[in-house]
Image (cartoon, rainbow, N blue to C red):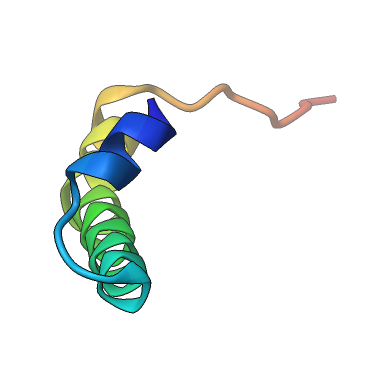
Length: 52
């Protein structure tokens, strides 16, 4: 899969690396901005307190 992605990207090696770094940063930013808060609000945390 990664080899196919590498062949599809245009330009010399340094442009391909730059495109992949920017794409990875965008994916990470989308996860932090939308996916993780949604998952935190949707999935109920386990009650971890112990009462005596």
